[in-house]
Image 1 (cartoon, helix red, strand yellow):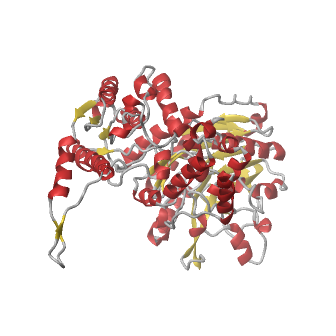
Image 2 (tube, helix red, strand yellow; image 1 turned 45 degrees about the horizontal axis):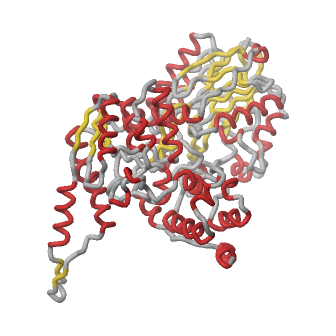
Image 3 (cartoon, one colour; image 1 turned 45 degrees about the vertical axis):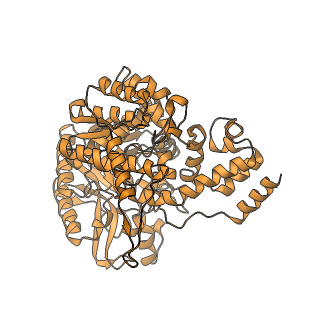
Length: 629
């Protein structure tokens, strides 16, 4: 009876030595458990998101060398693993050496060649070139190779025949995107389906995205059911990035039987190995569908991502500026779970505009967490900065004339934010021996509701892919499920969100941020996360049709509540669109790395150009029509 092991391993990007040691350890474990086959993830040797490290020939040679170590370790066991494959005699379209994203199979120290492939490995066919993926920049696809050889992908894509203990098995080998072919003109799975296979294997390096696992179970379960054979999906865990955006890889490796049922799922964010007898899978009971709320998955992604990010940069202590608001409170509760309260310093930095209410809530939060706490008032230093700027002469060296700067109330707000971050938090972090956080949420990040070199600063923006409603949901979840007690004070959850930078933002008078989160969260989400991104033209079409809330997914009645007239609605729309496509882009470019959880995170996942706001001809027609009514 064929026994197949799924090895869910942590892949450390850019460290083939570390990854190969993990693979060799898992091979021994699989062998000890009687497995005939052991499956590892896509790009298990080098990692996946490496930037232009792929252009280093020395690194590529190292990956080849470590790949040979894995092949040599395949005595009496079939090892399936992902690695970069190099044809040193050919070039990619960029003139650099030819590289393939490849699926290797080794047995008894030798590679097993797919039936019709010109190489002793399977080459990835479909190259994702959207969101965070940039495969065509580095890798040559099977489709390109087929054109080069004067044939078709269907002639090259072929099963691998395995000879194990006197039996022959035919396996269909796919690499990640090859199983997600709905939007391509070519379906590798369907081509292999004609080959009378015994099982499929999909090796993946698939970052976590909220809701992706449910969709994958539907898609891959249907594939296994229609083909009538089991399918093994093996994904990695770990943390990888492409510079600006940081992605968690959750694993969640899954075995589907020939009925399409999920019969085995490996745990999120944990290394694990499981062995399944191929012949018994059809009789295995289907695992029950998870009823966990989305926020539980988001919490695990954030906790794991923060922990691994800190480990990668060797940071053990954290400083957070807390205001008595929800974002900094949730950040504090998160980091306290990761580093421990003894390694967390919370700093409250009140000015004359901070109420006794928020100062008291900050103290209550710190008491609940049992962490380090400081209160450093900033008004004296802010006043000193303003005085220096206004009283120091500004000399025109061409004419010798003198003038003085005038600090407006808006500039004074910016000075407060920069004094807190650039002076107090940066100094406290250095003295404490750690780093300080950026606590921005996704709504603020969308429209640049933050201060450059102020509250936008920090080493990581862990909450910047969460809308405000998700931040509140996370507060409730941590209180109820993580801590089992009220850590984030209910007063912080209830209070109006406010930056408290002026008397116009007095929380005790119910005055807060200009962003109306119950509506704007969803409006801004339509700008970013819809696959066909919304623009002001789309929004005005919805307004004209009376379907804004339906299309955005927000609560009914909010448009009429917030915007009594068409002029009010249009004024609000243009205010935020101008910021989203204007100054906010410059701010996002300079923002800290963002930890991704959504279907579209800022950074490399949402590529932007600083071109300014644009309104289509149709938008201008709609605007004139609505304002004339």
